[in-house]
Image (cartoon, rainbow, N blue to C red):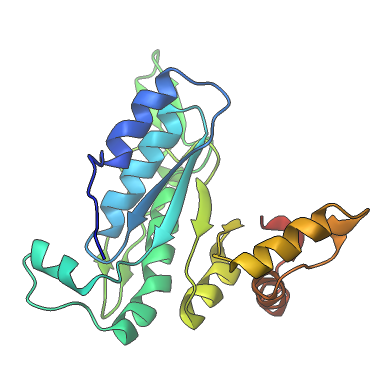
Length: 217
């Protein structure tokens, strides 16, 4: 198999440039949590959300390529079991950092010299075997509250965390299932009926977790 590598710009460098010349385009970047820190992810996406006026989205993934570890000063890839244990924690730390400031925390009163209300600052102080993150985030909370969360995991653990956290779930379909989906979409009221097993699986997991499946795309 031949792999062709093209110039691949770093998405969180590219998307602010796109934000400056667009108004209604959602800006979703894939950022792997395998070789990054929650604070970095939280700050980058909060920044993008402010720059774009509330149009940022985070495609929350892990890195499965075992050779990738060699580019990050590691001799071997993180075990998948370890991924499963830390994935949800990583998400909780990032979203906890996004909640560092209440919506009305920043007063910016030039007469009194008051910048923000200290009572509306929330220090995370998250500690576990995987993470130790004090916080706070050094930027106001994202415009949307949180950027849109996208998940594309196909493993058992990936589908479960998507059901617990995601607003947009991506999945790959075989040609036969794609064709079945297209046929169903041509029928009246087709959108009210699940057309594929991935959809049924995701919907079941959403409902099992107390979330409404209709709220996820």
